[in-house]
Image (cartoon, rainbow, N blue to C red; front, side, top):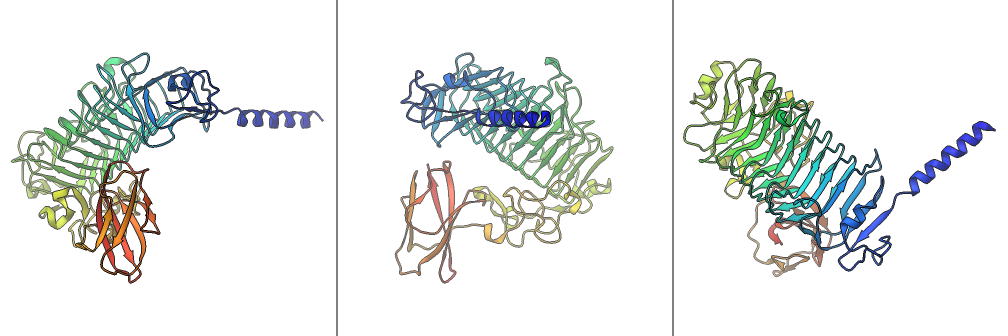
Length: 504
């Protein structure tokens, strides 16, 4: 009987724990004196909901413009996160929170999710989203633009996940900045561009406490371009980073990837840099810069590294001890004495490095459309099937989440060759996509008696399939972020037609 009572009590507590989670709603037409438990009874401010939440609660924010919010000393639990979620795709925070200049501030909290907000124009020392002294948090699907300091900033944040964010035009510093001894961060599938300094920056920051080391980060699937200082991916005091499937291009006065020691407790070392595509402009620096000490147990395999600078080149190392590099596509410019002078690839190979690597052909023979920053592999590219399977414990798919290798051997660079994903617009003037640009719906007209369209796929600017439609009429695109997309149309006679569309 006692066992049965204990069992019933355990069941009771599980049920109570399960049903105790609350969904709150926030709306521009709400009122903080409402219950917040439905859209019709929504709160007016996000902060009011943030003051109430406990583990398992979800705050849904409806489309509109809001002041920021500040969450402190609130803890979710494993499988019971506290979640702040934009219910639709136009939830804008353009005023600071109540305590700091940041749009969203998470501090001394664990297991918090921030999902789907647009956070713009924070002033003073404000970040778009700030997460500090908080573990097991998730920042995803947000767009942060024109913020005074950084788009996303974190400090002392073990096991943070930062994914699918757009981080642009930070006025002072970086797109994403992970700092202060934050171990095991995952930074994936973000786009960082137009920032005054670095696309993605990691710094162990010994001077502010902790051990000054960021251990075991993973940085993959990111697109980093048109940033203005230091590096696309910058790593100071980082231990055993895994960096793969990133596309890094057109970053000015910057390395593609930099491994070094500044304020970190150690020189970044043990890096696994696999299957990235790095294009350095004429005003850039090195493709990958490896400071003395950063060479220890660092491997650079299966990367496309092309540098248009007058004399700086692809890989620069200050020491070659315990360093490996091979199966890359490179310019004929390397360095074994750091950022000093360059040597030829053949001289570099004589030192025992990149013996299976290739000198890069012209860009148009490697990529689909490099002039428009489409760095997918063109048919016949020298990158196809010339990589190494040595990366297979880490790299199992490409930047578009296509399985790799597609054949028996890896392709080189961030993209595995996929003929159907190499999209360019065909000149079928009889097929009209309208309205174009659009922000809500698309339709297609066949002006020349083409057979009925069998299906429509929509791809983003780097060839990743986003969604599919069965009808050419009133295709709903309201959930898509602004940008350039490609429509792939197949007729009943299997004719493929591709069209560009701009969504704003």
